[in-house]
Length: 489
Ligand SMILES: *[C@@H]1O[C@H](CO)[C@@H](O)[C@H](O)[C@H]1NC(C)=O
Ligand SMILES: *[C@@H]1O[C@H](CO)[C@@H](O)[C@H](O)[C@H]1NC(C)=O
Ligand SMILES: *[C@@H]1O[C@H](CO)[C@@H](O)[C@H](O)[C@H]1NC(C)=O
Ligand SMILES: *[C@@H]1O[C@H](CO)[C@@H](O)[C@H](O)[C@H]1NC(C)=O
Ligand SMILES: *[C@@H]1O[C@H](CO)[C@@H](O)[C@H](O)[C@H]1NC(C)=O
Ligand SMILES: *[C@@H]1O[C@H](CO)[C@@H](O)[C@H](O)[C@H]1NC(C)=O
Image (cartoon, rainbow, N blue to C red; front, side):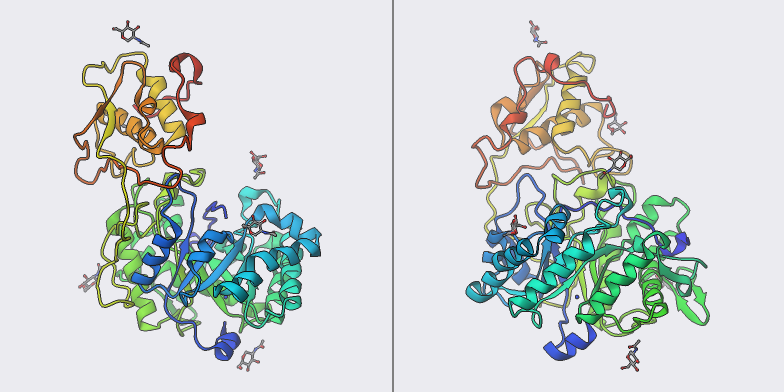
């Protein structure tokens, strides 16, 4: 398997569409974005939809079919891909009735009475990742078939198409070149059955492609090849020249489809993006370079060597999500074009608005301007420090600490303060969330330095009503919390 093609699993654990169809329904065009909600303090759906409109996103991809999100998308003209989380696949695979109920409640009603422009149902999310140990191999296709049958029964199958967002690790190449592409040997037959079903139903193949992961997993990966505007040396595949890993990876899929008789199946890029923190290659500069390079392709309507027409793609992602699993890596909570509060991270010309920069969320309300830090009078040697930091980091978010990250240059006290503040903010600035025994104190002076931001959370409907109170530390913290591996200081 050729690492130069970036054919590696993203391990991208998020909780949670075509040529003939485009001709029929009019070209989709534009750019889409993924809207994930695994955050301790998510923006209200109406605020998020305002951001989508202000920034000119024509399409949005969800990881579930949350009714608050769909209500906010009502009559906006934004095209929607709703999602079915992997943990529902088993039920939907085994019960036609469950599939009909899912479609009735989560698709039909929103289209007919709510004016939501639902175009796709994403059945599962990267269900064949190796981290799932094959758990969804038996249920994904039957669930796809049942949802398609339910859409037909509901009279929606012309408007709404099914698909399965897959990681690019479902295909591989035997030759280090795109032309060696085929579906992964261990799931080859299953992939053919899925591709056949999609093709027969005018549905697209959805793939998530992550050049960042190629770089993250392989220290020898040529960095320039991860970007679009680089002077990277090129790969010559029988006369076709590849100058970046996205094109090579995408066209490996095109070859796999072609080899198996589906050369015309439409492809949607379900997720593409670059994180800004949590790893030495995850920073604002790289993310801006990658996303601008990709957007330039979208604006120019330029595809890949084998599919030169416009790409149909959803950026990953809209906002940072601080409650995502960091099993794939610390970068996992930092994929947003915007921070968790809807503030843009960098300028990005998307060609969708008159502005050359991303438009921030409007009307965001913050908690008070106060932070929890390590008490100046506390000693680094205080035995309460270690268990307190471990507890804070285990229950909040310390992914901006570490080598090459935004807060990677803090001293030991800064590290400790960062951990305490994250815990305090995630717990809505409750006083009891800044009572690490004798070692913490609340301050009104912003401890942020340079790129290292000590964030203040936003007000949410649940703030202040004990959202995470079960996590609050008891008085005798040191005695009652497990001592995690002490990696932060
Ligand atoms: C509709 O979708 C939501 C969110 O994905 C899910 O919790 C619910 O079970 C679905 N409804 C039905 C009837 O399956
Ligand atoms: C997959 O298997 C590994 C090793 O047996 C195990 O640690 C892990 O929890 C399993 N993951 C899932 C999602 O079942
Ligand atoms: C690529 O090379 C050209 C010409 O030498 C140069 O102007 C440009 O800055 C280079 N781009 C990058 C990303 O290095
Ligand atoms: C793909 O589309 C082209 C042009 O319409 C057609 O000639 C060709 O037969 C199609 N290939 C398959 C495998 O359907
Ligand atoms: C906090 O400091 C006081 C005074 O130095 C001391 O009596 C007390 O035992 C300390 N508490 C903890 C939990 O360490
Ligand atoms: C701060 O924490 C990071 C992340 O664990 C660590 O790499 C660094 O060495 C710490 N800095 C100091 C001065 O303790």
